[in-house]
Amino acid sequence: MLFQLRALAASVSLLCLGAAQAGGLEFRFNDAPARLYSAAVKKGEIDAATAESIRRLPETAAMVRKMRLKDADAFIEYLRGMGRDARQVELASQLQAEFANEKDGKFAVAAAETTRQLKAYLPPEFSAKLTVHFLFGGNAMGFAFDDMHDDVYVNLARFTQATAEELAEVVSHELFHAVQSHVMTAPPRPPAGMAQAATGKVWMNRLLYDLVQEATAELFSHPIADRPVTPFSKRGKERIARNLGRIKNIAALMETSSLRLLLAPPRDEDHYDRVYGILFYGDFDDMGYDMGWVMANAIERKDGKQAIYRLLQGEPKQFVLRYQQIAESDPALFRFNEDFLAAVRAL
Image: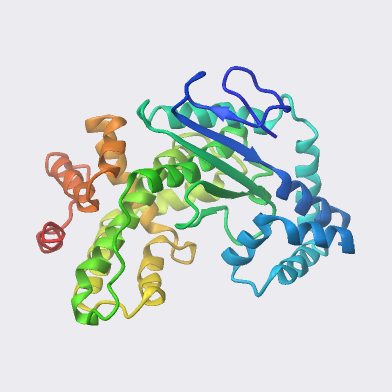
């Protein structure tokens, strides 16, 4: 299913930001995997031909990787399990009905809304061709891989109750991660042979880099906090309210996590992931997203939307330091402590 900026049409699968320009951002919606997966779940069984079609989809390999499954057959068994769950079968049925409404349905409206949202933050000279892969199932609402810059994945099983605007906000969040991969300079990994004790600055800088990514992408998905509750937004609004009520404690956790990485560096990526997860995994209430939004929102209000793009082009520490400058003159904002800031400046 593809969309164009000037005229939405199911027969065209490209949506361009910037009318008829060679440059600019282009993205397309690929709903083939969501159609196939949800149809299998709705049917309640997966025959040999359908199983082979699922195996051949590149998105199946992405799901295996994201869910840390053994192989495509393990994912097929996962879909079979969904087909035995009455709630999942109902969600699949709802999605199949939405796919039948191509002209005026949720996806057409979401495409236009995503265009509007992203265009406000990107300069005309930015250029990339991205793909949103719609899925059904999995353990995440949306995701992307560091080594697959132009592909993002959105789990439509989580969006049957969402409005087109709410779907667009999450799609924009994920697409902005793809934009970041074109703009930001990825932090280096510790060189082979470097002593663990010497890698502290590398790992701390990595956490700041991840903070910038999630904070700026959250600008797109945070607006649910400012609208009346909907069936889709209820849990998210409650989480945001909790986290904003304890924002100073979350900032202290950011300081503690950063200094831990600096002074007691992790041995490897898995150990880093445990520290990252305290701030950014749902098991711990996604605290880092909401703290990051406070920071990015303060910068946007002070410096404008284009300042967000400029910050992506610089060192991650500049995001923290610019926020602190703004917070110093705004008593409504939390402030980081000087020990943490000294460590940030020394990166």
